[in-house]
Amino acid sequence: MKNRHLPPSVLGFRCLACGLEVADAAYVCPSCSGNLDLVYDYRAVRKRLTRASLARNPDPSVWRWRDLMPIKAFRGVPVVRIGGTPLYKADRLAADLGLSGVYLKDDGRNPSASFKDRAGAVVVAKALELGERTVTGASTGNAASSMACLAAGLGLKTIIFVPEKAPAAKIAQLLVFGATVIAVKGTYDQAFDLCLKATDEYGWYNRNTGHNPFTREGKKTASFEIVEQLGWKVPDKVFVSVGDGNIISGLWKGFKDFYSLGLIDRLPRLVGVQAEKSDAVKRAFESDGVIRPVSGDTLADSISVSLPRDGEAAVQALTESQGFAVSVTDTEILDAMRATARREGVFGEPAGVAAVAGLRKAAARGQVQAGEKIVAVITGNGLKDVASALKAAGRPFTIGPDPAELRKLVKTHSPGGMRTCRN
Ligand SMILES: Cc1ncc(COP(=O)(O)O)c(C=O)c1O
Ligand SMILES: [Zn+2]
Image (cartoon, rainbow, N blue to C red; front, side):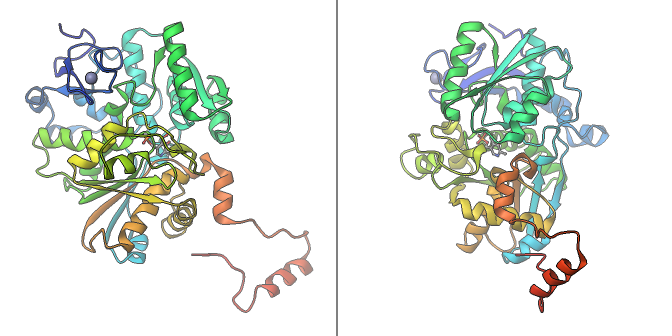
């Protein structure tokens, strides 16, 4: 049976857990409930997507990659521009680490200010194609605020489950974009399970990370951009923060897509960066591959996950790419936030700069070589979590509107002068 909502270039789904191949599925594997991956007919895609066809295509957004998306009939896409984010050469950050080829992929520059917009793009297009009216999702904050932003103006209602303690900025985004927000007195994991139950009961279209197989198909577009932005060079290593594991598995899918199409002739190693107490993927990767729950406790709320929902796919990405995992403390994350902002002018939220924290640690341990081409993906903008930014950066000097007070302040801080930079 051919799935009537998949283009001819998609052969069907393959279960990432048991390997079962099915032509049609709503969400997870009908046999083992594992997460599904889309399988493409690369020979068909190759006829349309080439370096030459890309050179002729002026569209820098995620829709540049329609030929590698599982949408048959586009009945609408979000109004705002998603993807086409900058890749900066981070020479000062690199020099600090004794490296030369470090790049930052700043995905905080997406419309809702996080990498999640890439996933939301495809999910919204799919929901419109399927004729859905209501999309639901559970999220630490970014996936949801993305869904609310991207659904705006398209006649799609969004019902969102977030942990009550999600940063205020993310909740504000949700409300401003018009989502119905259900703040769950509990963890992200509990919000996720409640959202799945709501989907069963009310039939809303579910966007949950990993559970919905289409999220990965949007996230992979970052890899396409990285390769194109590097002039068709493949980075040696890509550092990215890992919570549920859907971003890293999406990035891996993207590189594999390009490799299967013959657009690149080698693959990068992926490095998954997790917060120290939210490191279920790292533990599984370094032991028997089995994901077991951890406390999930970290200030980096977006990667605070007890039981990663796309953990198996993340472990596969690390294994297949011959990469490795690094865990970082909250202090190291805050240090990386300052360094990334002050050395390169890029302001990331804690999970957004965790990749840089991981890179710094890996470089100090000799796990990256001086001449390597390294990309660190900045997955979310710093304004998403101002409280953490203030923890990283300190407080301003407060004085009255009085020149005498100013003179006193300046004097207190001489002879070095007023402190302007801590790094
Ligand atoms: C800013 C940011 N970084 C990293 C992640 C981790 O992505 P994943 O849960 O797919 O591993 C998230 C997920 O919410 C995020 O919002
Ligand atoms: Zn299965």
